[in-house]
Length: 199
Length: 192
Image (cartoon, rainbow over all chains, first blue to last red; front, side, top):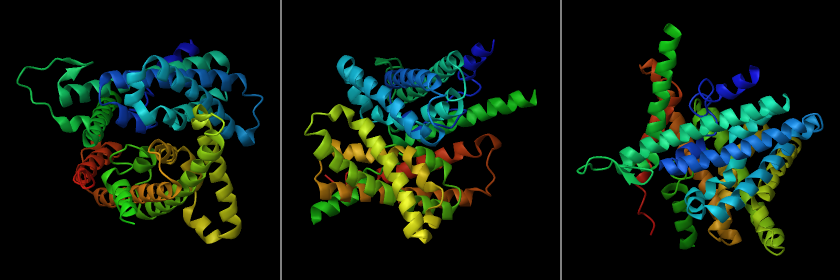
């Protein structure tokens, strides 16, 4: 089924940001803890799916010349919705994610999928594509957040899980650790795909 | 005057936009291959961020705040930025073609650079006056340019170095960024 294919490609083959090098800013910034990564991923998934739906429904109506501006307005509206909902219901998470919630607007994943897919495909594949990419993004963020949180503070989702005398590598929850972690993970994924290509 | 100097140093180095605040990563990792493109990108970024912050500050003060529309900040700012970049591009093409050619394709690309929206929103969040906003945005973008140029210099040298095949390309760029971020952490505590 091609709709299922659109959904699963976002989960491994074209997983952002590990395979599809888009939307890097929130990846590095919010993955200080697994919970933050999860929250950001879910917020982005919501915006991605909703904007994919609207853009796919309006794809024959939006003139080509103003399509980027139209996409941005549609995406920004959903970002405002997410912002207000998060501010109301998950205020501690909202404070931690801070500046990066409004920055979902310029997340290249959402604009990229709108331009490359939703504006050219019907409703159901667009939903599947948005859902797949969004869930892949959420998984990557949560994974990276978990790695940084475990090594950098010994905790996972707020629970201390390392051995008692573990001295955390605090650098991992700061800027250099983010770059280093993402670089090593990307290197590992390159290695995995090289092994797959050989066999 | 010394306040502005302090603001400049803190925005450009201590809280460097790309190495400490994590903004503007995609072009940072994507454009840092050649020195001339990096310098072109830096110039474009300085120009757009300063101009965009100036305009969005006024939009916030005179349109959003008086009418209680603060929740529309995201939509208003991004529309202003997109339109501004388009107008600037058309204006430069007609009046200063040399600058337009120097900036090249980077000008339209900057609309999706999260550093532009990020710096604009930060100026409002930090409740700066108009002149402070100008200094802050100019300094942030200069810091961005400095980090980008440093990154490009290192990557150009590494282009011919023997690196593991799995780490070639973006992983190496990220590890270099890690080193740069570590270096910039040395600035922390410079400004109280």
